[in-house]
Length: 344
Image (cartoon, rainbow, N blue to C red; front, side, top):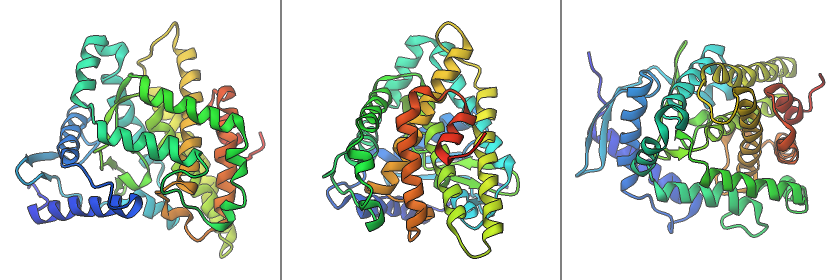
């Protein structure tokens, strides 16, 4: 039996997205109607490449900019589950395998330059790429960046970003990679709030930011959101031992995500796969650092850290360290050691 989301539900979801964007960025930044068409197109592509990676898409109505897709009733948002202290490692491996399959099957090394150029035109997505350029890589790294906002506790530490030339130069380098490295098809906005989970499975959604770019971007964005959970649970004082144990599970979750992804991501460019992976992990570190900082000082924050000043300041340190050290991070273990200040 096929369960469909109703037209009314879809229209409400589309309006909710627009309201969320305007809430973060202001009424001068309404959603483009083309956004829904890109999202449906990406759902179809992802489902074709890796069935089960996203809700099954059924129909798109151009006239009312609405879509029909599989009803994921019974699934929950991964971010909510992690915040409440629930995690299953199959969620991480499931996402990693789907993501690797999509990246691999659309990778320059597999489909060739001509096909990749065609794919990039299909998912040009200028409006959403511009939003990411501005609100992930540009404004957060300017003292007077548009719509920047932060807690008082973070405000006292802003020089850790703006007075550190290594941090700002690495952010600029990540922006250049984001815009210029055309490698494979990406989700484009992958975080724990854009993944639905049930007992064993994980499905990506909110794919309206899909575009062709560096594979490391998706991995880095999601890993940063796992780092948020580590610091969230480390800072909760009630039932502290229980929360610390969950924080340690987030270390395992981060390792699971990256290691399974690298195991299945067999496409590569360059002379050898080992060097490609080292460079990819270095990029993951840089993108994760940018995501962490923009969620603390930029326009769009995450619920994981709201009202938790100690966790926010700890996370800021993680983002700064990742940008300072990205050029010498080549394994997930080293990445997590630096981000989480762990001992070997």
